[in-house]
Image 1: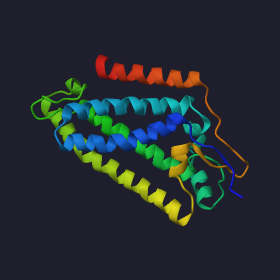
Image 2: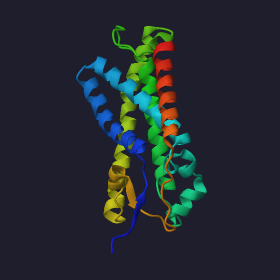
Image 3: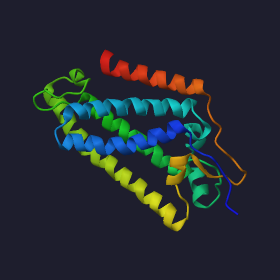
Length: 215
């Protein structure tokens, strides 16, 4: 008899995840091929998505909220000893999520203040830098830090393969369908109402506009 499944991931979390999967390679390609206008546009879209994910981490469905999966070192140790049976991000996976979000935030932040040598292609906040040379230095750091983000992505992929091959747990399927095995007590995601999604989207859009146009 097939194991019962429950809802684990809501649609906003899954769309955010797969948007990142598409946007990171697209941002790399546009930078490598000097499509900097498109690169900056995609970066601004990524900023809006990241801000939405942060708000959704406060107001969203139960498995999307940071409070539900960001735990202390004790919870990580208990998980490593096998004493965890919840749904959603496990305590160790939560560290990966937070590191990834922080790395994306740093990468976006560097891009916002960066500029090329001539100031032709410049982030929307590059005018806040004391001079063009400083903005160009941030552009170089933006390029270098990208490989930190790539390393985190590679670590994430290794973890996904480890769970699939050695623990017989498919992490990709639930991120596509939204459904996965129930926890030991039959736990399932508690869906957030539509108004919380709308509030998170409006706040993210407003803050993105403020950062790009008003600062």
